[in-house]
Length: 379
Ligand code: F6P
Image 1: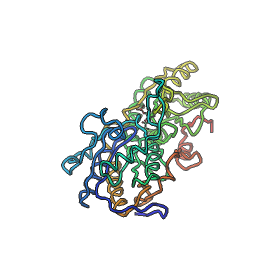
Image 2 (image 1 turned 45 degrees about the vertical axis):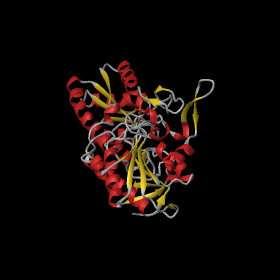
Image 3 (image 1 turned 135 degrees about the horizontal axis):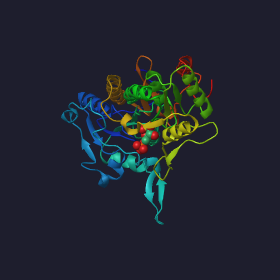
Image 4 (image 1 turned 90 degrees about the horizontal axis):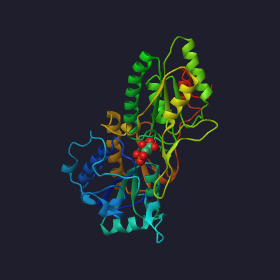
């Protein structure tokens, strides 16, 4: 394991807290299992915190014990299961905790000092926080308040910096690819344009990887604003070549050169904006400007469900074990990360608040172009 020089040393850990935050992703249970088993080998107690930080900040909202010791038997045969046995929420960010003000409005409040004191009150020497970019920001804030913390990178979106992959991404791409494969045959049979909308927030990783893997004819990602005319040209070009169907994969965060991304629900206290709707919009626009039947499919939360792929199971296991190893080595303020050939420790400060987007000049985008896939920019 590579140890980054700027990480802080912490010692004397005997009892750790473990929580999963943000949206669920396949592989969370594998991380939980790995943390619990690795901690047990060191003679440490591992306590599971339910529903993200609500297990500490709003225990009355949790179904079951808000904080509960996890024994080896509790994590028996869960590594292959989707979801998280600890529960999770994206509405309990302690840095922006939704709180009712005296005038009845919901406002955001920094409750990280409460998290630190509640951990101390429960005798937790350190926390393992499994989550996305928001969770890594929280982890960094807790570390800055002298609570030993190690982060584990989770998200189907793969948009966390400093790690080649987050767990959950491979499973999401695998499922999206299977869906695209299925859509090809129906699109081909009925000479239709099928538009497939996938998650990913402000990054196009899922769309790009699944689109290439599934042989999509067009892929639209947030990193490359699109022109509808470029898409129409690509469809017309296929028609001219005798191919009267097309499969278009669009990331939920994709946006036209001259417009905005589609937002389903605006941000509110304690909650980020919810994207979605671009697939249906595109299908309607393409239908209006071609003689074709155009249909849209939103894969949405299907991408998050189901069993983790073997790749995600292995990195989930490696991440969990590495998080415990990091604490045992006296580290805090770090995230375990997938390096080229090993798990590395990177400072949380270098991850928090950043979004890893697709490199538009990178070889994966170049490959898509070389395969003749339309990326919406007419190149
Ligand atoms: O971050 C993972 C993710 O699945 C995004 O791709 C998506 O925009 C978001 O979560 C959806 O979250 P929710 O289920 O809370 O609407």
